[in-house]
Image (cartoon, rainbow, N blue to C red; front, side, top):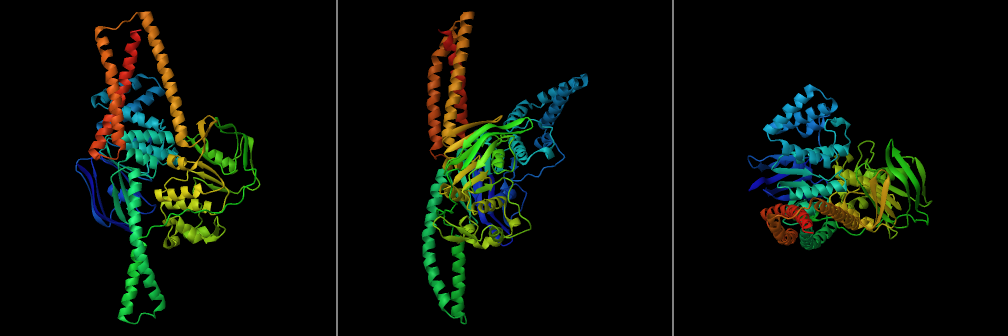
Length: 628
């Protein structure tokens, strides 16, 4: 069943063509990712689909009778409303009942009174009448996962990250047929991202989302749409399939472009050696040349070669942190933290939001003063600091002029120099785009420009605070290549697990209350070790429960009934069968085979099997204890 149809959609901003006559559809149960370079119209396309913008040509058709929920990249909130008003803004009987129940509960918790008890009783009756308890329970689970505890808080009091999480919670809570999400993982910590992965993977919903989180994309989506040079390309598979097929496409295009470039060189030589066009024939050749040049420019993609900026020499002493303490009021962020950085070290920082990750970076950069302890940089250190606050621009300036304010020429690793314009072009700001005004850039393009200005100062110690937010996959690949070749020290705060795995070999985990764990290895290695520890704790907990059950059996002299003996005989076989089915389903889902309907059915069945294994295992443990 087709939920969404996009037919021959075209959209331009001024002379800039975003996409040209693109056509695609989303079927029920399909989970698709939309990817493209920054500034090429991803968010614009989602806005058009959601009815918040209009195309120049073409149409969007949404199937009659289905509901749609949309999470835009930037949410416009009503500042004087509460979190509850935002999240429960529909006027359905269930939502009205939930809002009244939550209000009555808050009043009763604040003050015990007969009037409040009476209001609560009526609210409970209404919740039961409209059968709103399941919906309320799901809403509470989602809100708690996103750390939204006070639903009566005013929207104006929320930070940017809290607003994004509130908007995402609202979108997920809505009972909807088609979810449209624009960069849903921005501002989420890794635990939240992994919870959202599981939620969307197992949810029986249809999904279209923009994301450049490659682990998240690979886990959730089985279908990828790419906009490139105004055209749409469709890949029916996961991220690895997309990378393989896109590489094949670019290789084929490069072969075609080589032929075009040979013809282009001949035409170029002719134009340079011929007199000015005075004849019809000469004018026709020049027109042909201009058409050919336009065709090549349209088809050519930026070459992604290794690129190294020369950084200043590092001395023996890099950066020493000794017994560092820092608190905001009663909130302890750093407690007795010490570390000595070594040459060429690439470190990552992980942790939940609000645990002090960005604070450490600000302390190193002397934007904050510690409560205790000392930070001592080496004499040769030249920091490059990419902060979350963004680039401070006075007046509306062109991209190239902004870069030239910091460096006209950039020295690269082989000792040669390149111009600021060449530097920008390497990272995807084409020569003609460099004369664009800063205010005309997309959010991702502004962040990329900020990062490039940080890099071109030739630092030998890079400090990057969430550098991957809003970056497209091509930019991420370029940045990863650059940082892998960077010979200085690197300290990164990021929730992009793919990015961290490719770059860092040492991680600081901020666990809260000033506690920082030190792990040598990348994110995946840390996660594997953490899961091992959690499994050990789970086994110990089960062992303790089994011991308690055994002790209870001894004191109560419980024995198996006939039906329990029969149940025990069949449980082990049933569990083994479920384990085999689990392995089979994992293999099918990871094979890259199957259509949308089959992938959805496998995902739903996989969750059921997992739940049944847990339930039957606990029952087997309970019954087996009675036999001892």
